Image 1 (cartoon, rainbow, N blue to C red):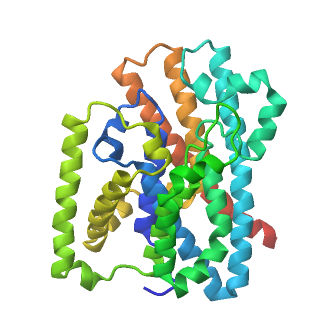
Image 2: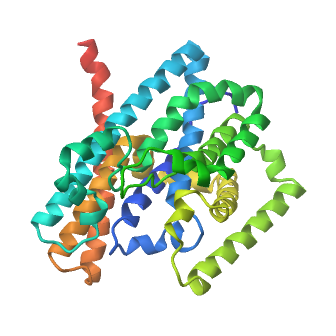
Length: 362
């Protein structure tokens, strides 16, 4: 695969599926969320999204650098960091509004506390200042500060990754290993945390980045070693699924996700290897061609993340306000509404982007 090749339909499909899954996973009464990755593995769609984002960022940087030079690629990603920061502020504001709506509707929902609205109501100006500098990160907005850090540093990482991938890999996992201690040095307000420790989660992003620069060859995948890895991955995935379904009765502590626990990396690696085999056999491309709406969601990742966060909160609040969280048809309707909202949003943004160049020329 050339260094400047466009990203594949499979990557967009995985990203779109992850975004839809994230939206469903944040609707507590969702029916479809029971079929999502976190119920069968010690990882979830967050790992998929961060890994794929690293892959896509590397592909985009290489493509721009190949056409216009590394300077243009670097400037594009510094600008991208500003765009994600704007999306973070927008998401934070929408989360606070969601919490306010739940309070006004007198809905008994965890969203009231998780959104940060109660802290905002007590000290609005202090919280706004804390949000601006990442000291306070309202519910579902917390993943974006990590992306801002990673995207901003990408221009420094990419040249090094192309010259010395082994150094980048070792350095990344050394940083991940110390992440549990380093997270204490991140700026945080009282009662707030970084839900995604960037010192830890950068490892998942870097794995995706390195896989784009140095893809595993088809010859290796079909070799004896590759087939042995596939068998081992199958055993791991089956074992983790059995534990999640029948043995692990208590949910994983939050810190395991915040600091990207090693079991989550191992679980994701097994799933990712099997996904790579499905890509090699053409199964994912076949699926993506029949579900183009999911591909479109993946292509509009940032907008759909913000839209999915809002959709999940609105739907959960509506279900609670109407007291139908125990109704299976209502819960399924909420799932359909969430997925439909993302598909409509992605399609609308794609059409808007297609119109803009024509408007500029007239």
